[in-house]
Amino acid sequence: MPEGAGRHWTRASHDAYASRMAHAMNARVLLALALVCGSYGCGGKTSGLQSGVAGKGGAIAVTGGSASLGGSAGSARGGGAGAGGAGTGGAATGGTGIGGQASGGASGMDAAAPGGSGSGGLATGGAAGAVATGGSGVAGTGTGGAGTGGAATGGAGAVAAGGSGSGGARTGGAGTGGAQTGGSGSGGARTGGTGAGGTGGTPPGAFLDLAPTSMDFGQIALGTTAVATFTLTNQGASPSGVPSFAAEGATYPLGTPNPVTVSGCGAALAPNASCTFTISVTPSKLGLLQAFVRITADPGAQSRLTIYVVGWAIGFEVTSPSSLDLGDLAPGVSVKHSITVTALIALSDLTVRTSGEDLSVDASATTCTATLAQGASCVVTVEFLASTVGWKRDYVGINAGGDSGQIVSIQLTANVSKSSDLAVEPRTPPTYACVIEQTSPPVVFTVTNLGDTPSGTITSAIVGESARDFAISDTDCTSLTPQATCTVSVVCSPPMSATTATRHAILSVTDGNTHLSVPLDGEVSFAF
Image (cartoon, rainbow, N blue to C red; front, side):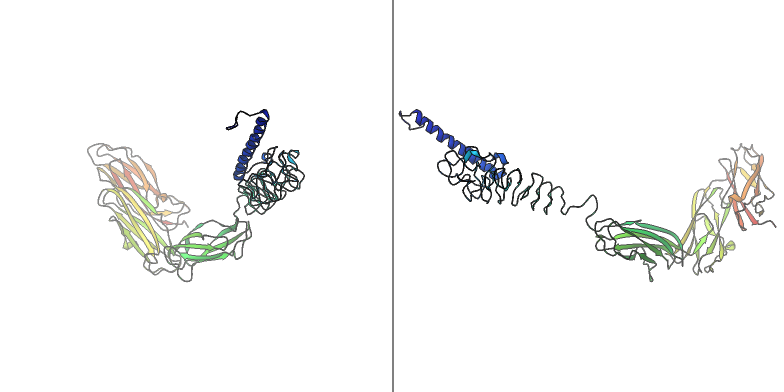
């Protein structure tokens, strides 16, 4: 019994009170739904309870639509009067459209739960409002509806996920709205769509790619030109600008005229098109050449493409390995090495230098001077002579073009060990008369153990610059008792590839403690 009813409370009073309470409860439910829908949006069938809310007295105002939750007047059973609500009312979460009432239907409950007659919207949408979850009509007698309109996420206006007109469901609409996962109209989708998105992995604009990105031209004779080819490709989806090229010096100035020139690729590139260009290097001075070729294009090369170019301009060649192992030597043993220099251009500043206390230029056997005509040759002879024991490493350098010009460096190494009781004769053998593809008479070397104890195992070998032109033809040396002797026979036998010049090598004899070195010289000629 309600408060203040007194004792005259009857069954009829009870029923009337229950009815009012039911209506009030329905109103509260719809109000709650309206508030939820206004904030978050509702689906089609969430609109309106079948009983409506208008009964005695018009609509219950709610926030979220431009009008009220119900119609401005309604029947006792609940629906809105007439066809779809009173004029400008919107749905519970509605929009600014023509409006439907919360429970839809032309005359209360006789309309479908999620629809409304006329052109109104259902409880969760409006035809033209900024609706999160509505459609322009419903599945009733109107032109819109959940069937053809926007479903749970549709809307006619600026909707988070839907489209207008005959809009689509959660994944997009056909109109101007964009869907969360894509729309076919002018709106782009969060995860794709046919708008401004790209296709596959192709960059959206021009994008130039280069191959290769560096080139080592190696040795280039001064006055000649070396050429390399490169490819430029537009991997983007739009045409590129016209490529332009510029060569810049790296370590040293390139000088004038520029020794690095580029030709080719003089037009814009269509998508997926390629062109080839060449880089030509014509050194103007001896020595190291380093350059960068910069490539620009707008559009297509937002950052400059770069090719690193390196080469070595030479004016002469030498006939010597870059390193030479003289083997095991005894202190005081002289070993000479000859180097032939051939000029590729006319030289006027040729110099020879040595590094190390054990190496020097043998002036009496050297014919090279500062000047050397193009195509001419000269000989540089160096002498290795160590007075102390240990591992030795010395250098001879041949230079032209100044300190930054061409330098050829040759390394000579030797293991110098102390003398012991082994001795060899002759220490200075006669010069061999060597004939190409013939074997000379042998020179016999005698090895003697001058000590008071047996020697170690004796081994003999030919080492040095022209070791291939000499050979040990016979030996009976194994180990020696005190004062005993053995012999080693050496011949000269140059192959067909040999040239007519003086040959130098070393006969090395050792027993593990004593190292003996005997210089070998031979004059090579052809047989007539």
